[in-house]
Length: 269
Ligand code: SF4
Ligand code: SF4
Image 1 (cartoon, rainbow, N blue to C red):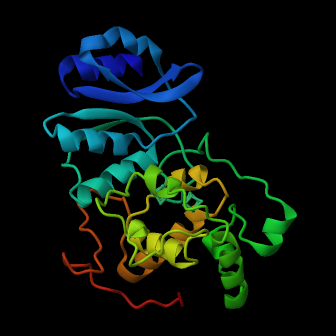
Image 2 (image 1 turned 135 degrees about the vertical axis):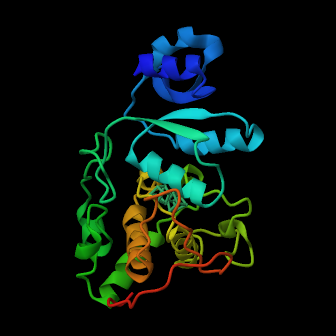
């Protein structure tokens, strides 16, 4: 891996490579460059994950002429595709050096070494939603139970914005979650369920199922499951496979681009 990164930097395939290096015992993102190849000895594959493609996109917004390599898994590639489709980056600006992963139904590779099933207490299992559930298992609940279980989860929210800040495909300059006309400020929990439904709607056709939001959530809200559900609806309705290609046109409810033609939706939302 280090040889490959060295080759990419020396041949100019990339100008910067975002990977991980151990700092004071913690694996942290680090930018490796041709000017400091000796640092490559410190490049590690870490179970810790950061949205390196988000960091790369922010660097490219300032220095668009750069080509940036990142250490990435399937989910990083899907996020790069989404960022390209939404014109946050141009094709080829971010190159991915692949490491193996991943439990997502969208995966190409093997089992993920970082996202493992979690164990939860009796109260959450009785009143809330088990984060380990599949969408099909969740759909077994009747509407009343589903509603009360999700409300139980949402009312735990601290409005820390960790889910939004870590998300590789949250790139809006003005965030609806901070718009006082949409979500009232000054109280906790944030308006339930409005806060979470706004984010869920925004993740439809955009969430790449990386699980970073759920890892970041201090109160274990099953965010990934929620966004899998909305993405499933988008797929059922429009046949849109989120992150599957950087050429697939973006699904747009607002009509700023032509959405794919809707197919009949057989399952109730
Ligand atoms: S799983 Fe969460 S962090 Fe990852 S793309 Fe979806 S919403 Fe964003
Ligand atoms: S990370 Fe969890 S607690 Fe923080 S805003 Fe998102 S849902 Fe709420």
